[in-house]
Length: 149
Image (cartoon, rainbow, N blue to C red; front, side):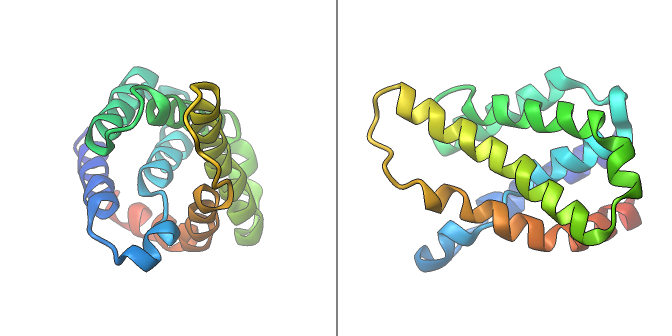
């Protein structure tokens, strides 16, 4: 329990840490990576309601539509628990591809939520670039969280 709280707070701090405006669209999705790690290590024991509340915290902090981040994080956690055996046997590059697709799925949910609500959200690519940077830092995040756990 303590490790999950510590990693949640750490991901929150890294996510809200001020980035230069030019590099803001490259910021990795630290909450998504954290929830992905929880789903891979805890498997089916990960609390989806806890992940949903964690996502609501990000929705409130970022001022987004309530539930957009939360829904994306719950889907990441559920799919990570489902894909846990595949992640165990996958090589690092294959894991990075899986991380890219899972984080991109969360970005797609965010994009769809804005499009369906009628708000102008025309920039499609800037919300998917954090998926790419998240995939590139996945091996580092995995090793650090494995070491701390």
